[in-house]
Image (tube, rainbow, N blue to C red; front, side):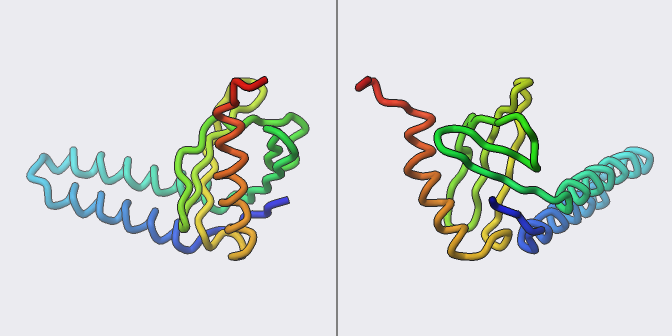
Length: 136
């Protein structure tokens, strides 16, 4: 089981991107009411992202393509490997009701050795799951 802890790097990225968005809105030469509306939208987005960031996430990857998220009784399937690098993993999982869920795992959300093992397993098994061979 992978119990993801809140990532400081991901948190810093969220805050910086939203702060830069507010700065861009404030220096834009548009009507003040539009600036206020856009700043409010950015703050709402920040609130949603922070709430999502601090929500506890637990992932279990069973054999094959069965993923369990937060003790859900229904297995999810790996829909796509959006990004796998030394610093970040982005997965899209499809649940039974066809709902897609993005899972963003920054390098500091897991211990170093477990993050490395997950990354290697995703590169090997994830590619095989998403691109089954025609040898059967």
